[in-house]
Structure formats: C-alpha cells, structure tokens
Amino acid sequence: MKMNLQNAQQQVDEWIKNHGVRYFNELTNMAQLTEEVGEVARIIARRYGEQSEKESDKNKDLGEELADVVFVVLCLANQTGVNLQDAFEKKLDLKTKRDHDRHQNNQKLH
Image (tube, rainbow, N blue to C red; front, top):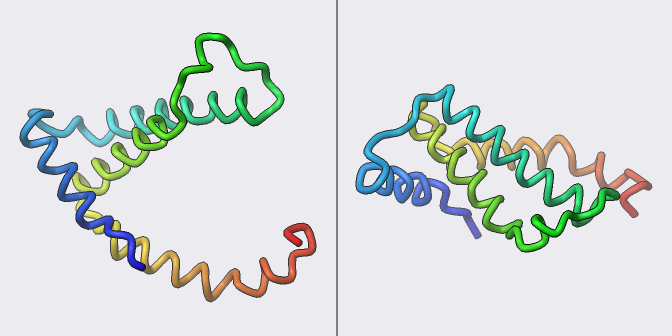
C-alpha cells in the first residue's frame, strides 16, 4: 500500500490558502518544526523514558504532537517545491536495498 503524501501536501496547501492566509517563511517554519519536535521529545522522555512526567504533561496527546510535526514538514515541502511522495518512495527504496541485510544480521534486533 502506498502512503499518499502528495494528497497530504495538497490538503495542507488548501488549508493554508483558506485559513492560514500564507505560509510562514522557511526559517520560521524550521523554528516551528524544531519546537514541535521538542514537544514530542518531552512527551517521549517523560512518558517512556526515565524522567518523571509532570502533572501538566499527563494529558498531552502524543499523536497530536506528531501530527504537528507532520504538518510543518508538509508546509516546508510545499514552500520549497519538494514532492514528498517521490522523495519518500526513493528513500524507502534506498533503505530497502541498503539496509535489508544490515538489519537482518544485527543480533541486537533479534
């Protein structure tokens, strides 16, 4: 089954045009992406890692935070002319060819 990133990029573009007025510039979106990844890291570190989870963090939705990351990545792809569908398929093909035996032979993964 093929992931449809092209459709996701179109949906984000339509949302920006209808609700967001315009894209933030690339540097602002890069800062936004860093912020969103930090929020994901905070949840993971406290919920699944060794740090204790603060009461204020217990209701944070990991899925929502991951979706924020995806949204900003789609914005960056749109505004820089990257077709994520093509890029993802190429990356998956490369990883399949390059990493298949490496992971199969990694005793740490078994």
